[in-house]
Image (tube, rainbow, N blue to C red; front, side):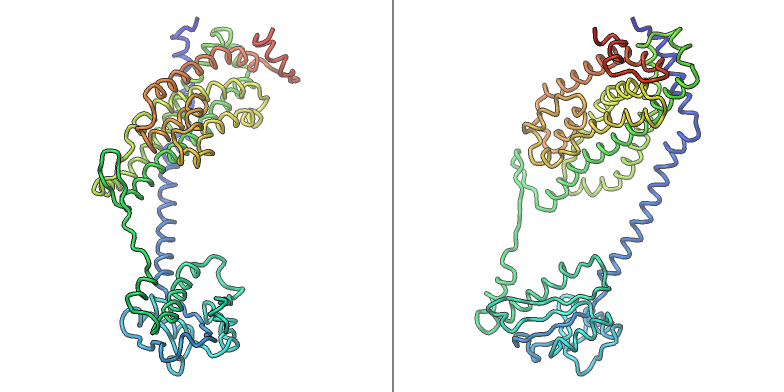
Length: 447
């Protein structure tokens, strides 16, 4: 029979013992602030870099052996914003502004060369971003050779920006003068899609709203899963460290003389688990506080937020943590040192984020066979229910939610009851390690 007063006393002692440490306070409150400042600074720097790169114009060489892009079709007008950027890019590359044919299309500058040798000479000195050579038999083969500098950037947006422009240019030159202007425009832009999503209620949402809705619905469970994994790994460190220190200092022998293994396990789980959950909720509150800056935008676009999944997540996370934490305490007590105990408990935390590993299937079929099976497994139930309620809340039955809660409650009770026997054996274990069968026998889990 578990005595609540004993459990409360052990839980209060373990909680205060951890919560008063400066390292715990630093990780709980200082680490999120440091990470927010660091990530904000890095995002600002990268944002400015990308904006600068997007506004920067690069000159590319074009060798046309077919005559599709004739000299009469080349634009040499540098008026306007694009023209001024093109002129600046030409001067920066130390290319002549006269006597050289240039084409400016959509902030892309092509310098036309009569042969590959003259263009490649400039490419070797990195005065050109790349050289595109249209083959003589382009009309039958469609071959275009791209010459790139070996010392150029490893990652480049060239294929996403320059090459579509060149493709449109060649298409325009193939059709110009042969078909009607309207046909040319339609060939260049064959579809202007206006995608509308029809909700079960009959409400219609535009593509932009649907895209943002998908980001919100998929981002919420992913973020909560990452927070759960972080909390489990962080709190398991306190669980394992405390158990290992108690074994080394022989404190457990005194504790077991005044409290049953069930009471000791439950008290440590509640006390150390409370410290871990406090840390989790502090981090979650800071994340939610930062996310509130986007609430106005989401509200104006009428994007549905999975509030039901967010509201039920604390309950599932607490139950999931108690279940996983009790298993961590039992297996962690079998280790002879802190590193060894951490290795023994790592597997339980990984099982808790199993839905993240199957996220592709859950996003495609949140209420399919995989989702329904994971809902009834105590290791994966917390995150699976949250994912299903975030993606398509109307598809998960109420009895599934209650069933998942019941499975978690029953599993937690069983893990504490049977784990307490193994916990007692593990705390008193010294010297050579017995076999697994011997451990189970001593814990009275086997006859």
